[in-house]
Length: 156
Picture 1 (tube, rainbow, N blue to C red):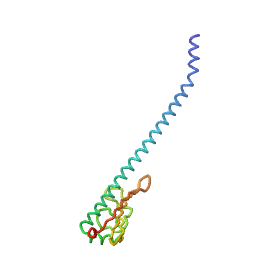
Picture 2 (tube, one colour):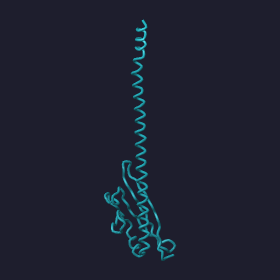
Picture 3 (cartoon, one colour):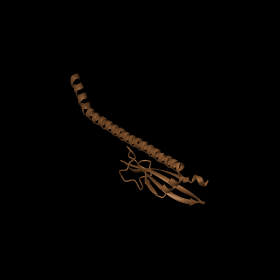
Picture 4 (cartoon, helix red, strand yellow):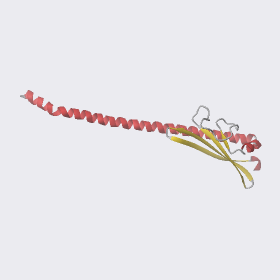
């Protein structure tokens, strides 16, 4: 009789075990999916931050190069400013016009354009240089801009 009683108690809980296993699997699946989603967002944000920092570095590099070009020969700099748009895939004045879709900075995913605007302010000529470094990734189009105004150092 005691033997039969133990068997009946076991029968009462046997169906519960299957339910508990299914419930535990469901909870583990939800936790795993949450971790995968969190990891994906973290990697995406990390990649974007890295690219944004590199784009800012490339923009600053171009601004410093432009400044050195102005300091090296102001007349040549003013003549180059007559063209309003350059592609600075390499830091030279040879690539006039906007960058095409394949004129990346060497070994990178970035395009670097330079826009120049010349203005006469209070009798002094000023050249505004805007460097636009752009890239496209899985999240879409992004850009980093840096603008500096250069004046003719002889007109101070």
